[in-house]
Every structure is written in structure tokens, then in C-alpha cells.
Length: 294
Length: 158
Image (tube, rainbow over all chains, first blue to last red; front, side, top):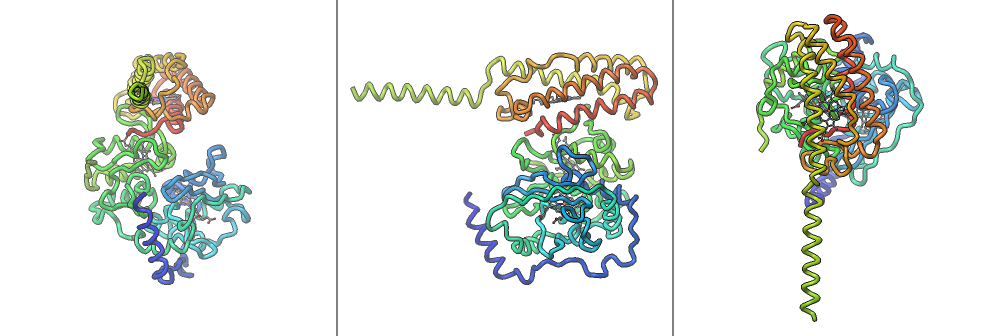
């Protein structure tokens, strides 16, 4: 690939200049003060955030966050770690603050940067009360003693320090839909842009793996190489809001085809939301700019 | 003599080119018909599912006769032997096919998905005429069977 030397050069330069400025920044010690976790509420947040889609195995139970799922990318293959309540192989031994730092700041317990294959780039916009509720729920799930497997990525992407400059470039706390005029739109924006991380699949990425904001939800190549993740802006998705909400509940399109591929796991999550929340997501998808594919 | 060698060579290379192009871009008539047949089968699923799905989604009132007929059709469709549809060489490497190579790598798993749908539709047909609530309960597993196969064995559209 012709881009390769360029990417490498950019990363090395950025590394040299900026590693100190962009060192991992976990949450402040008092970030969770005065928040009382509610595990029951956290179950819904956990579903809305889709943690199980990535951290369960193909064969294990829906609640066993044993890891092992593989995510192909142009930078190599990432393998989801064990985040079950096991204190040794999972994250049962992490404090609430350490877990919250991982989820919203992409910083690991040992203080290093985490890869954005873990969508903290979206979760950074999550409400801190939701985060502590989610963590309380995770702690009620069973333990798995399966060791986490190493990622399969080469130099320079295996250098976690290089993620500092990457985060500085691509992690933003701004909403893409800058104004949400109604409560429903605001809720929909929160569910899509923060918890649901829909853009991680539906928005194309640039050479360095950052989401292309001007192509928000306009569809993207499927990382597995087969077919395309569909454009779900109003330019392509002509369904009514009700149709979209039904799809997120049952998986059926308006002509009663049934969803397939990675979207099935997403619908397993959205089917656990309330009707009002699904309607809010639908309203949001109708409100984002229509972007036609060339 | 060199000319003759050259001619032979060019004939041979034209031949290889043509057959390579044929292999990459074209299906045999049998393969094309198998793909048409399986998509038609899927369309019939959608059509019949739509009749009951509209009731499940409260878009039209429940009608026991319509629900029973559609459910019986779904059960009959799911009982059809599909072995002839899923012929080798018709996976996603062929334009227009969304059938993932995993079907052929794991035929037992794929057939198990067909059995799952057959079981769910048979159970659904038995209750579809018994009122809206019973019908809704039987409908769930049918939809899940469609999705579960599409999750593992069908790629998104190009």
C-alpha cells in the first residue's frame, strides 16, 4: 500500500513529539464520588452499550464475558479480553474507578492506553451514573477463568504509547449531531453516539482508523471483507421511524427480511431497550444529514 | 517452425484467458438456477411471514384464518429439502451471492439452522390460529431462526 510509509512516518514523528503530552489520562480520583451504583439499572445500560456482543464467546453463555472474539482491522487482529468478574483472568480485581477509566478514557488498570477496537471513543460521552450502574451489573455476572489472548498486530501498532497521539487526533467529546431539538432526539443521540456506538460499524474510517465525521453513518466496508455495512442516513434508509424501531426490536425489515451478520448481535441488545428508547434512536437516524454514496 | 510454436502458444494463452474469465465472472446455468431458486424460497418466507408479522406488530388486526394459512405455508416451505440449492461455487466470491463460504465449510451447522426453522415453523403452525397471544408466542422462535442463520451464513449486501 502506498500509504504505508506515510502512516509510519506520521506515527513515528507524532510519537517522538507528543508521547509525553498524550500520556494516558485516567479519570480523576474523585470522579465517582457521590454516585451510588444501581446494578438493576445497569443491566439496561449494559445492553444499550453492547458489551456482551464483543466480550462473550461464540459458544459460551450470553452472560459469560470470557473474551476471545476476533476483530480484523487494517492494523491487525484484535482479540477481546476476558472482562468477567474473575479476579485473576477477568477484571473482578479492578476498582470501580479503574473500570470506569477503561470504559470512558481508554486507560487500562496498569496505566497504558487501550486500543480503540474497544469503543471508549463513544463511551467517553456516557453519563457517569450510567457507567457506575453498568459496572455494578458487570460484577453480578459469572466468572470465567479463560486467560485473555494476545492481539495479533505488528510494529508500530503494537506500541500502545502511539495511541496517545491517536487519541489526541480522533477522540472527541463533541456530539456529531450538534443540536438535538427535542428530548427524544437528545435521548436518541445519547443512545446512538455514546452507548450504542453504531458509528463504529456504519461510518467509514480514514487511513489512521479514525471515523470520518463528514461521512457519519453513510456506510462502510465490512472489516471481514464481505459485502458492505449499509448506509443508514436518510439518503439510503427510507424506512419510517416506526419501521426502524421495529427492526431494532425484532430484526425484521419492512418487507420481513430478517437482519443478518453483525447486526443480529446489535438487535439482541436493542431488543432489551424500551419502546421509547427505540423510537428515540429512530428519530435520531431521521435527523442526521442525508449522505448519498457516490 | 518458430511461427508455429508462437501460434500454438497464443492459442493456448487465449484459451487460458478465456477459461479464467469464465471461471471468475460466470456461473454455469445450473449454478445460476440454484441461486435463483434459493432466493425465491427466501422471498416466499418473507411474504408469508409478512402476513403474520403485520399482526404481531399490531399493524393489522388478528385474523385466525389468515394467520393459520400463512403459518402452514411457512411450515411447508421449511420442510422442503434444500440440498439442491446450495451448490458448490456459489458463495460470496460470485457477484450477487450473499451466501458465505462458511456454508460449505460447515454444512452440518448450516443444516442444523434449517432444522431449527423447520421445528419453529411446525410449532408455530400448531398455535397460529389460537388467538393473538398464542400466535405472538409462537412467532418469536420463527424470527429468531431466520436471524440466527443470517447471522452466521449470510453476508450484508454489496
